[in-house]
Amino acid sequence: MAAENLIDELLQDAGERMGKSLESAHHEFSTVRTGRASPSLLDRVQVDYYGAMTPLNQLSTISAPEARLLTVQPYDKSSIKAIEKAINESDVGLTPSNDGNVVRLVVPELTEERRRELVKVVRNLAEEGRVAIRNVRRDTMQHLRELKAEGEASSDDEHRAEVELQKLTDGRIGELDTVLKAKEEEILAV
Image (tube, rainbow, N blue to C red; front, side, top):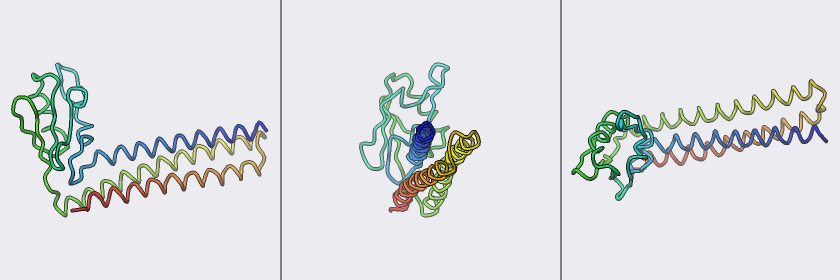
């Protein structure tokens, strides 16, 4: 009975870790620009605010009032120049303009070539996610083998756990592939 509990804990832990890898990949997807404006595009922008590098979303309200427009409303109007500079220096590829109160970012149409480049970026992010999920599987398999070697689990227990682990891995990678397909379609939609 103790072996089954240990194996169940290992499988549960593996499931949680794979879920976190999936969430991480999902978040990375959201930072890749599509033809639509999304506040998450600015998630990685850091602003030099009085000498401290601060995430833009902690200094302002970011919204997408239209499909091709982002607005950044700073809490402190004196930080507007620093915000503009940080957006210009980031890898977002958008040019800010401000009226003294609000920074506006117009999201241009993507060219066909740029869409294809972004699909490649997203596929690479998905592959990193798959590798992370497989690494969790590999670590868990190693623990299962150690349990068997220490005599805490039988060969049958180990085999049954490996089958469950493989099902879990296949399921998580399937979820990742579904999210990838949706993101590719979103990028390629004109």
